[in-house]
Amino acid sequence: MTADVRWAIAWMRDTAAKIAEHKAELTTLDREIGDGDHGENLNRGFTALLAKLDELTSEPATVGEVFKLAATTLMSTVGGASGPLYGTAFLRAAKAADTPELTPADVVAVIESALGGLVLRGKAAVGEKTMIDAWTPALEAAKAAEAAGSDAGEVLRAAADAAAQGALDTIPLKATKGRASYLGDRSMGHKDPGAASTALILESAAHTVN
Image (cartoon, rainbow, N blue to C red; front, top):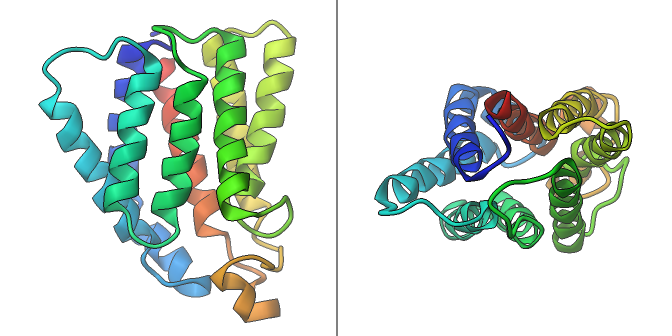
């Protein structure tokens, strides 16, 4: 499968399945250093997105249209910080995906735009134990893969693998942003739930394109 409109829809559907499968895990991670609702909130949002996709009467013309639908749905249904953050990420990604099929360079632009939206909305930086710590290495890996001549699927795989490692790398970090920062040193030793959900979302992107 190429990184086209059908892939974008498959990505959203697969993400919904992964979030549902890992809902309890994400909730546990968030309970350890946050509000304890990350898994439940994301599951509600992506379940709503599935319903929106089922209601489509025609295939969207561009990948960006799929991302925009994801953005608006998540913003309106996901509570806490996750809805605005992921909604902004997909909204920015939509602007970089105004095409029926993504080239490797387009994939990089989508990830870069999503990360830019997250930084703008969350005011976070690398090393603060947030989802930025998964998205940033994902972008770096995507850029390297694209520069090496990889196809869109390979760029997505590189990004997904880097995000997974980035999520693991948040475990020893001390949170300095968001609710987890209130815990100080007690936030160390726990994986950031936002980084964990980022890894799941990007894994779905790579899985469905390949």
